[in-house]
Image (cartoon, rainbow, N blue to C red; front, side, top):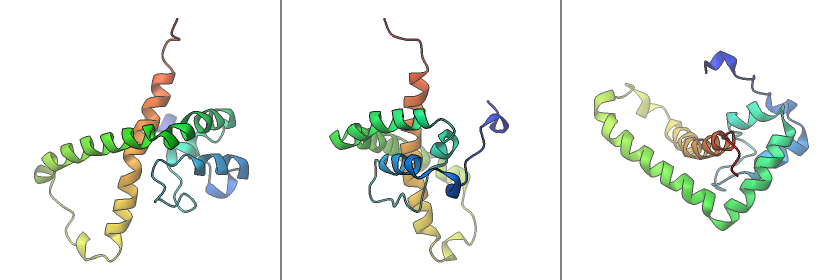
Length: 132
């Protein structure tokens, strides 16, 4: 599906407080301050508050049991393995290392990608045919 077909992201100030609280609870990595970082996937889902609540109610217990963090860790490891192999072929952005603070931003952002892959996969799998 082309990106142009995505429902637009809801601006942060327009997310209803109740929905924002649900989104903020869905954090497999509690070290990432969700008050400052809201993954774009959730911003696309705001028009469906029932879906956000369904995600919240399904995922928060999985965070508590360690299931979701474990899945995220496994995806992160697989991504790191692939990127280690590709990095020498891709090269680097010249001068990036000289920009103060950019490393921390990239680390925080990169930590969310595996989580969004897991959440997106769970959503995609949920669209499959109902099981008998």
